Image (cartoon, rainbow, N blue to C red; front, top):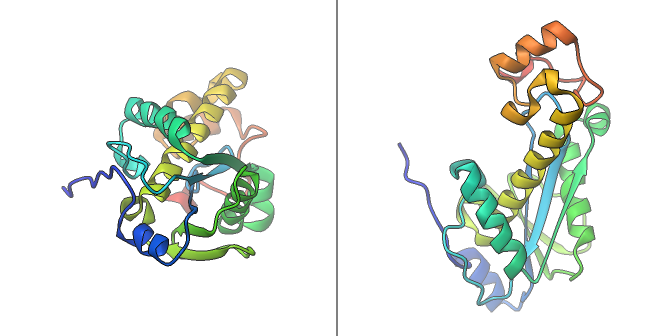
Length: 206
């Protein structure tokens, strides 16, 4: 099993950009591309160059309670942060990739500080007037992207927990909309809720 990479401050790529004059780098990531229900949520985070937070890592590699603890610290120490989403209806209309990019752009546009550079997790970028770079496995390689992944994941989880109160029969608080056996059983028994993605099927997510 591969060891989890933890970061406590900006990494090589971020520092290289800072040396080139980009003082405000925003890390951008999303959460929720795979679920059958709920929005896709993105986050953007800008830190001061000397920021240090112990234990930052890809949100998928962290336990839920640790993600929640780190989310509080990220919000406290960031120069600016924002979250945004794209709805299940938007996902069905423009597809999950484009909806993810839309949510990320919305998060960047909500920042109270305009970044000089955007580091975006993955292979794709969205059109923006700010200089942008896609970073494969960025949530494991860049401090700011990993922080964004934590905020996106914790925000999306909180949304799904709230939806569970409205639609308890689906078990959203337990599986967060992902295609688990519990979720599949609930879908067969009750059909889709208004928050299910109609363009997704259990088979397509396997």
